[in-house]
Length: 363
Image 1 (cartoon, rainbow, N blue to C red):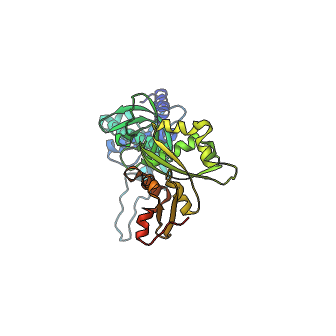
Image 2 (image 1 turned 120 degrees about the vertical axis):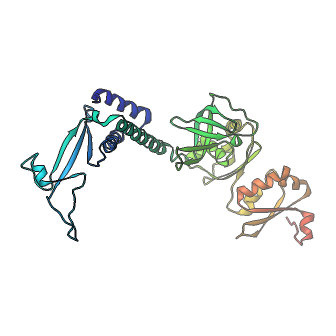
Image 3 (image 1 turned 135 degrees about the vertical axis):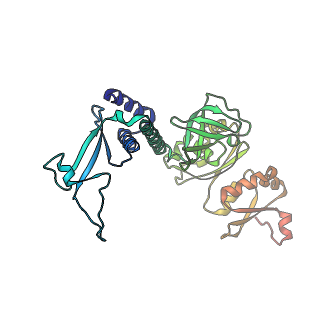
């Protein structure tokens, strides 16, 4: 017989170690004992009861009392099931028994044998894994798109594994900022790009290149974004090179760009330090798409923006030769990021190019 005190100690250890509830542990153990009974006897009339205060375990065979003879609709005799006993048989055990009552007899757990004990062990392990997984999912299921801090625990050729407490998140090496060095044992900020509970174990996929990483860093460093004084409209990013962040304020006395930069550039400096000097353009959002697009193409100036198709969100930008290369950016980066930021397809032309299409730049 299992020692009750030792069993309760084991239960307490599982609760603390795996983070599962007492109810789950006891119900899993009872289910395991019933499975062991079925394996040992070949019958399905087993019942297990565990005293939660003493840890004492009892396994019973039980039967429901039925009529001596029962027939189906065709008049055929119905034989008693594993968990049924006829009234006449039951009264040999208890003369006062009635139809519908239940009889139970305790089974000695030692009689289960090694095979049955192994079955119980397998059920318990499976249930504990399921319970632990559900518990972890409850903790991390709502963490997708959030910023977390973890410890770099392991590395393989393709990934870093970040200790987040009860689970290791996977940070693919392709999702670290180009040029950054990740040191074992160091603490690191990571963006949760995906939480997947469909496989054998919970998958928490991490990134430091996702545009959401920049968004969460801004929210972390700039209190006005948390309290609603400032609003972050959109983010466009090429990790390791440049990001554009569009912000605005409904408070006329609050400068959204100045608030993001901070006193002597302190706020934006902390964000840039986290992304290893990646350039960050803070753009003022405007409800007028032509003004927003003009702002988004910073540092280019002297631009004329024409919304050519509002439904398809297409725009033409006309600029002088001096600002044309700034608007396009190196390898088209500035225009590409501005397009992502504004959600507009942007066609940029010089004044001379536009005139060939009959479009003229007028101040």
